[in-house]
Amino acid sequence: MVDALAQVPGTWDHLTKQFNSVEPFIWYALAVVAAFALRRITGPVMRCLLVVLLAAFGTSDFFEQRAWWAPWWLLLWKVVCVTGLILIAVVLVIRRRPVTDS
Image 1: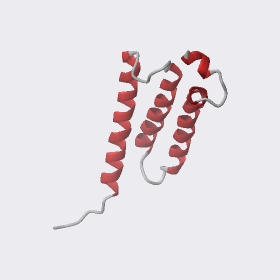
Image 2 (image 1 turned 180 degrees about the vertical axis):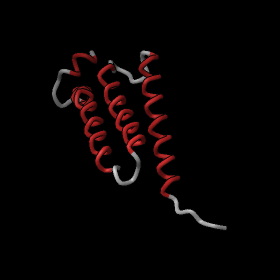
Image 3 (image 1 turned 60 degrees about the horizontal axis):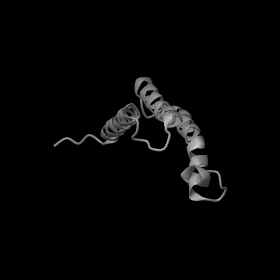
Image 4 (image 1 turned 30 degrees about the vertical axis):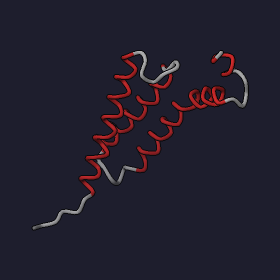
């Protein structure tokens, strides 16, 4: 039944399937934008790591079937990417804070 609904234009399942086929390319575009937008904010190592994590997260979307948490290795893949992205965000926020002498 779900597969049949995914083929009917205008249904939620069809829209979800369409978005999922485009989603990896959104992550790739975000990786390219981040590579250029952050070149004055952070160094090349952090920027490369960010680009690799965004691209890896986008690539993981090609392996999604119905759920992002199954199979287990896909969940692990996504958790590693998201954890890395959060750590980079934390590092960038800490680096941007002004240093105050007490």
